[in-house]
Every structure is written in structure tokens, then in C-alpha cells.
Image (tube, protein in one colour):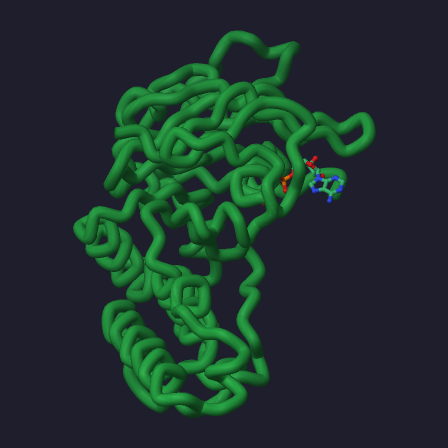
Length: 285
Ligand SMILES: Nc1ncnc2c1ncn2[C@@H]1O[C@H](COP(=O)(O)OP(=O)(O)OP(=O)(O)O)[C@@H](O)[C@H]1O
């Protein structure tokens, strides 16, 4: 069944067409990556899908329901959870409380119960705490969970953010550059974690610059360039796609013929190189 359906999604910032006609779907339990050079519109697309930006055009459906332009909380309540490129943890809260915050989406609590600390409130608080521990175990975060989250190393903070997103009990998890800033070991653990999340039946859409990770884990890859979708296919198809290779590596207009002696052209001719290619540096941001 199709879980997420994005149709002709558009977003403009003044004259900049950040997203320019994006169409793709994500099925139940599927892993779909969105890739593209810096500034291609990936995060803008995520922000439209999750309600942080109101798209200029197009439709976003979750489980068949049109959620275009709805508030982030309404879209989250439909089972869409996300992490952010720049972590958005509550630095002054404990590790455990950060993850417990995710459970408030579905824990049934009211002001009356909270003020009077009724047995029902205490039961639901315990349920939230148990659930938070469960997800912290799942992401493999050992150590002190009562300490402030901001005292954790960066890689561990990323894990806490994923645990918090999972504590919302999503059917679709959107990860914005989950491997950024992680070392080799942490990336291997992330790969395993993403697979284990998928094995729970949760669909995953990730934005990622680490091509090795993308090519290894994705069932489908959607490629954006200057807001436009230039490819949507299996990893092996996408990395052989000339439009994708050109978007990543660029080609001098005055030099349309590949020169095997030129490392850039040699790389463009070898699809395997795309897996190792560093995206071009940010421009005009
Ligand atoms: N809040 C904003 N105001 C104005 N322009 C923006 C805003 N956010 C993004 N843009 C522009 O929209 C375009 C797409 O940016 P976006 O951040 O979505 O790209 P991206 O593919 O996620 O890039 P990166 O890989 O660097 O994170 C860029 O030209 C960017 O400068």
C-alpha cells in the first residue's frame, strides 16, 4: 500500500524555485532516499511534506488523505515522524525526557489528571517512560539516561533524536542527513539501525549525502537538482543515469567530450565513482 504520495510538489522563495514539481511515492516498509547536490531542494521538500513549510503547489497525501499545508502536529498525528539536519533536541532536558516528549503524541493525558496526579496520570507517565527506555535500547544508547542530553557526544545525540522520532510510533520516518558528522563505526551502526526500523514495518525516507550508505540501503532513490526531479529508480539504475552523474560531477559546456585523462570526466564515465563522489560545495547560501 502507498503510504506517502507526493504529487507535483512546488515551493518558491521569492524567485527561487526550491522545489519544482517533485512527484514520488513511498510504500509501506519501503526505504526511499532523496539525494541531490547542495541546495537541490531536499530539505525544502521534507519541510513541505511534514507541514513546516506550506507548499506553493502540489499535493501531499499520507495513507490516502490529503494533508497538504496542514500543521506539523496534524501530519505527525497521521504517523509521519522526522529528524532534523541540525538536531532539535531539548538541551536542558535529560536524555530520557527528550524521548518521552515523543510519546506525548499518543499518550492520553488531560490537565485534570496531570494537576491531581491521578492514578490514570501516573499509569500513563509510566507507560511513556517504559516506551522511552524501549526506544533508547532499540537505538543502542547505553549509559546514563538521566543526564542532560547536551552532554552526550554528537553521534549519541543523533541516536536520541531517532529514538524520539520512533517514540511517536510512526508509520513513516523521515531522516534528514542522519549520517552527517558520524564516524565510520557510527555509520555502520546507523545502517543496521535503519534496517531494523524497516523490519518493524516502518517506511523510511532519508536525505543523505553519503552515497555509499544510500546505494547500500535504498530500495529506491529519487534525485533532485535545482528543485527538479531528474531520476527515480533503483540504486543501480540511478547511479548509471547520465543526468545524475552530470548533476553530481558537472560538465564544462565547452568540453562536451569526455577526456579520460581528466579525473572529473573519468569519474563521470564510471558509475561506481558516484558512490564515492563528494557532492559539490554549497553555493549562494
Ligand atoms: N528559508 C529559506 N529562504 C529562502 N531560500 C531558501 C530557504 N530555504 C532554502 N532556500 C533555498 O532553496 C533552495 C533549496 O534549499 P534546500 O535547503 O531545500 O536544499 P537541500 O537540497 O536540502 O540542500 P543541502 O543538501 O545543502 O541541505 C536553495 O536555493 C536554498 O538557498
